[in-house]
Image 1 (cartoon, rainbow, N blue to C red):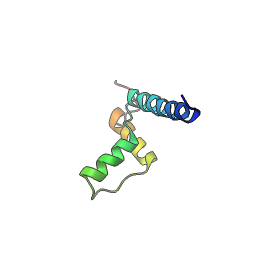
Image 2: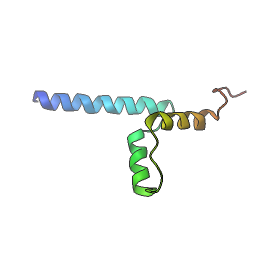
Image 3: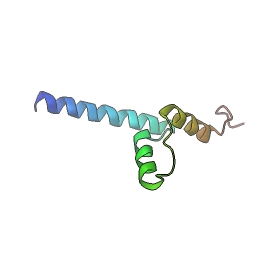
Image 4: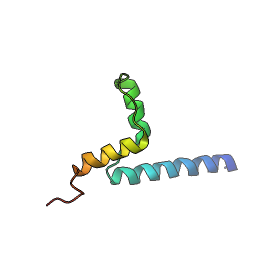
Length: 69
């Protein structure tokens, strides 16, 4: 395996690990979300990553600080 192929494989593996960790925390993949918006909702403005992250947190925790009771 060449050095370039190893670097590419490591980069791909790292991106998948980060994506998996985010999904475990309830944060969907931003790049997939942007792609979905462009393909299915071209009239909508694409939010910044920080706005996307905040919206996902509110949706997951319903703005209650994460407590169930």
